[in-house]
Length: 100
Image 1 (cartoon, rainbow, N blue to C red):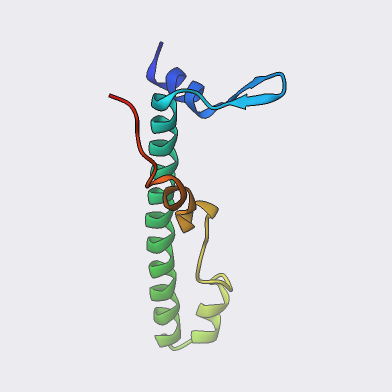
Image 2: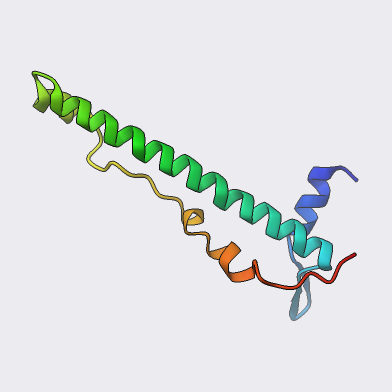
């Protein structure tokens, strides 16, 4: 089995009639690492974009034709991803791992 296949298996719960099975401890660890990575990446990307937009708006205000320069910038300086909040890591980060 390839890494990608194993990760997809860990991220996809199995439906057994009337219950959902989320897998063993390794599946839980893989899922936690994957989701935590998404949260970290979202935070890094959003923060960098937001800082660049703030700098671009400040530069636009400093130009001679500031109204024209500001008009081509988006109205909002920020982007946001649902992964930014870090809820998954906060919720499951303190769980005990029973693996080896």
